[in-house]
Length: 235
Length: 235
Image (tube, rainbow over all chains, first blue to last red):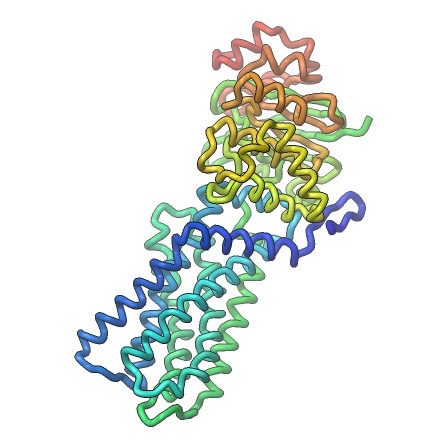
């Protein structure tokens, strides 16, 4: 229900969030503009690594590096497009005309990216394991690392994509601004993944510290997005 | 009668260029204002300021009792804006687009479904309701945009050339939804004064550079002058 008080109507944030997220997922499901490209990029990159490194198995830091470099660049394909429909089809105006808390747009877009990443990883992480890992024992704890890294990537990606979407050089601006910002996230993600992907089975050296770093990064960028997104939507 | 719109020395700059300069007017609730002027006179800029999509650079603007831009958040949801872009997502059907906007405006699901059905029928679009909007002609998209504009029963209608792309039947149907005498205050930009002038209570004439040339009751505006202004001749 819309709240009305003193002539002011405000749509509940949960309803606005569900509307925007639902619209994005429905559109992607129908058009498949981002996910197939992201998945194809990731799988192709794994194939290239497999032949370029000339090794049938990877472990430790090398495995973690291959995994996260591939996932990061695949994610950029989705991040680039997450605000395109709002820009090209007038969605920004429609959203700015609605009685909603605009930070909901940031949260809904970040959630859509999170779903894209989750789908991407459901397809590509098993391929990675098949190509490079001796044992799948590290995959269960790796899921937690992936989830935390995805939240940070989604928050940073939604923020940067909203800033870059008005630029004609959008495809250039997103990686240029995003990549330096996610360096700490990638260091923490590879640091946490490294012992999990060791040849002898998963180890947990400094695992908690890296998880805490990932969590802090997520919190900081979610808060930054929440704080500044309203201003980014102004004319 | 209460004032719906009160503007004093309103100005809007885009960098060095002034798009709107020293605009002053007063419009009572339920009345219609016709805005005339040549291309580049700032008509669309004025509408976008009233819709809270642009911030004024100077002067004072009060709309439905809300001071802009400070109280813009109180105004959103009470304004129906029909601009040059239909603000419809190409990959969604007309019905899905309207349902999305209904959710953004906090209209309960059942009420929204009924209202969407009514509006689609009113604009003669029920048979095309489940077709993607990218498959519709420009005139049909304009019909759906009119449905979107009045979906949340706004108190103020801001209509930028509402007849554009519409055939004779579409214009008549649109008149039933956004024409005068429906209770809402209307601000209409039109290049067809012969049609729009008889429906207006007041007229605002803007000149090149967004300078206000005239603001008067509509009946005091000479139709010949209105025609020449709309045609782009120097007033």
